[in-house]
Image (cartoon, rainbow, N blue to C red):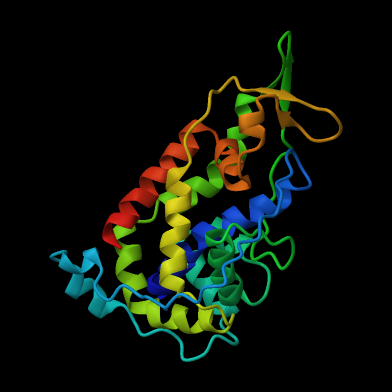
Length: 258
């Protein structure tokens, strides 16, 4: 079994997975984001992009030929996913503790693409330090050291070559679509993945000295515009400006190959 191909699948869905996990955990930490349910009575057609930009690369055929076919079934694939992740990054494999890995990762993409944030059945376990704020004459400010809590996750994802991820995604796309179809949703996994990436890239940085307040237990932004922002934007801001830029640059390159 070529574990590199399996590793790429872990990464492509893991991008969403760690976002989902952090957003869920953050409801019990520094911020709480309102769940937004997307309601749409229309039934869109399933669309999957047939030809990816990466296929025009000179080495595409050679690398694609080395990528093995995906598993016939999802059941019993958890250990394969963890072993595949270990060949890519040891920390990544240790975070993938829950069962039903593939199904949970695919569900993550769907949740983020439709602005829904689950609060149970998390696909990964990632321990981090609690959020800290610095008390100043102006009030509370975000502790600059908070961004270090996410550096491990961001570095793990962004050290993977985006072109290789796109090559393996192309070959594994039918497998992921089949897994996604189990959810009974009208849209395709490919569409939801692209939508999720776009949501992450649309988030803009905020001033590093954005003031905070603590009316009760959790911190809130003093600026109502920031406080009323969607939970995904708030999570990206908590990464810190350097981590946020690093992740967005990586996603932008990945998107160019998709």
